[in-house]
Amino acid sequence: MDNPKINLKEIRENKGISERQLSKITGISQGYISDLESGKKSPTVRMLYRIANALEICPHYLLPVTIYCSNACKKWSDIS
Image 1: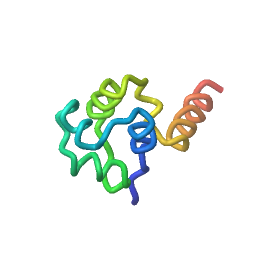
Image 2: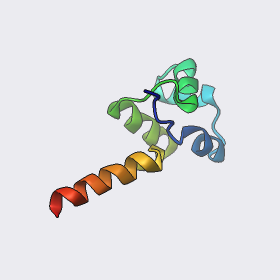
Image 3: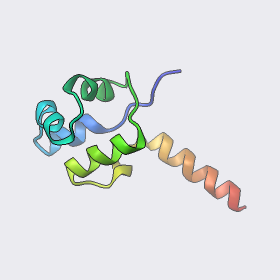
Image 4: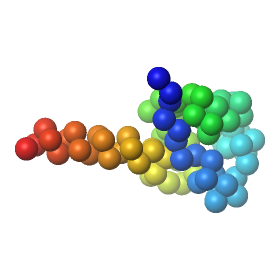
């Protein structure tokens, strides 16, 4: 199964931060950041928070819409 691609590259570029800079700030290797951006790897929750903190955004902005929506729908169906 393919890993869902997080919205990292677009957000990072909009903030004017290079992969190298993000790597230094987060302590996550530049190669791993590249793999996250291409969808080759998925971040752990802890890693997601580290990246979001470095980019000064809420972590859910990094999640693909399909994951965010499917989790919201699941929670809604649990309530119903």
